[in-house]
Image (tube, rainbow, N blue to C red):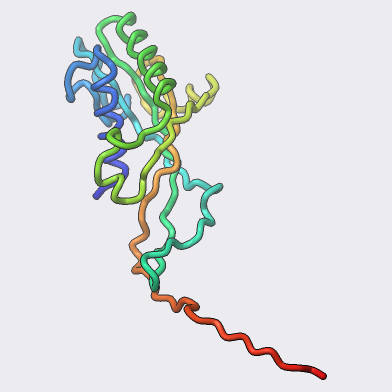
Length: 187
């Protein structure tokens, strides 16, 4: 099971259904823009460029399993993605950008049949898709990572929270099943 790969596949499946300009599975790649050679084929790069531990949800409690065991909490991540379209003409790239904006606006949560089964099994019931409004300076720094590549209009989104289950074995606990209270007269 690879949570990160399954997130990419879930995004690919969603966009194949919603963006007509991306006609088949090979049109959507999980490669960086630096690895894509511009040609006449229409493509969308979904590039995971940053992984950050979610500090707001870091201190969640252990989860109960039955009556006598507790599971260690999962690692909770924020995944930063860059979506970059490639086409033989600029108009098609703009159409793809607009469709991406529309898809993520209309459905800002990956859940139910939009998630791969392995993601649901690992506790990822809902993953929010949040616009990451990168300013031009930050976007320029990001594109500097791809030497000899011209800047292309791109969108950035954060998928959060992504749960990666702990591999620590559950701990056995003793629950209070019966409580006895004795009252003594102090007089």
